[in-house]
Image (cartoon, rainbow, N blue to C red; front, side, top):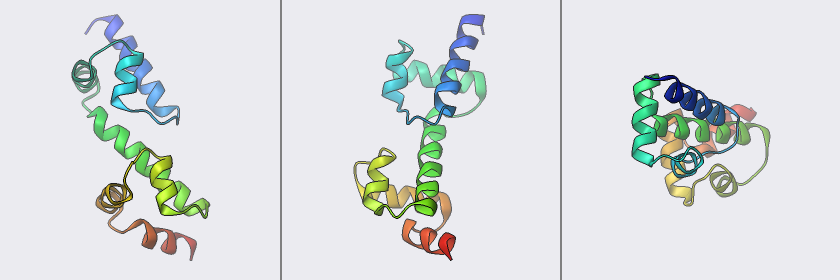
Length: 109
């Protein structure tokens, strides 16, 4: 991989790790790449799926909000980039093996 591609991947990682919510579409636009090229480049350089990393970032942020705020689950879902609460709840349960409501209950006890 050439230095330009390595530099791009490092900047993508910085953007993802900055804590700001990212999407494949937004990152592709920011780095002037198609979504598929962005994903391929990232996977080739890091061995990680960029889409998976972005979902993981969203769910970790949601877990933090569930622990530290009294925001409604619907509000948290929207805050971390989910349009539908049901999609958020399914993804959250796959990741943490419990629903957002139970997760909040267990972490606040």
